[in-house]
Length: 263
Image 1 (cartoon, rainbow, N blue to C red):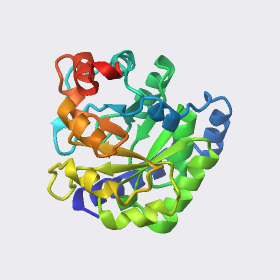
Image 2: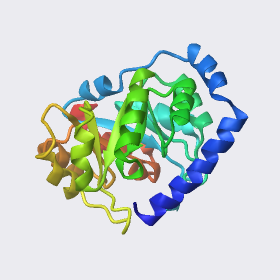
Image 3: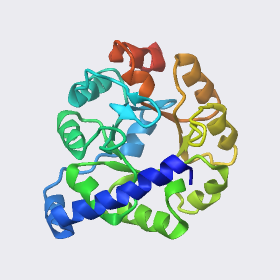
């Protein structure tokens, strides 16, 4: 596990312990009983074929620092929805990304699109949190989890009715993720050791992924030409955060990425 990822995960475990003491699992399960129905995350991406956009609400990151000063998560998500995004990803990590579960709750109540909780999910407790907050999908990062943890969290997310976007960077993690028989797979194009991005990374892995698995290219998408390159390589969806969050006109940037035919 790259050093930054290990550092984040170590801190995350302390956060989980504090959250569990503040809100016991039994309380979360009661909240889940009145949580909104889960929306179809994978279906929303497929409905935007040949390219579905998961547009990300992200204020900051460890590599870039503060990305956007005028940060109104609900307004940003509503802009994404109005301009043709298929789904919305919400960074809920506080220490490293300046996000929160409250951002997700507010966004989930304000838009009709399925919402992904993007965080470092290490424990079933976080899945209960996610479902109680209204998440339709959660991110599971293979590099953070061993085989047993990955299978357990994937199964638990499914039991709770949510989708799981399982993400890899290292190619050696691909086979163990495919053993889960997931309907979708994310490939991070950012090398967490060097923080460089390469769109060719997910393209190179495409031939090793069954055709029926919806493949999501994450990071490194800056232009419509990038989107076309991925689309032509058989990538079905993209997760874009920093490119959109840095844009002066977020809606116009979504339009540019997707192209007129996708609007």
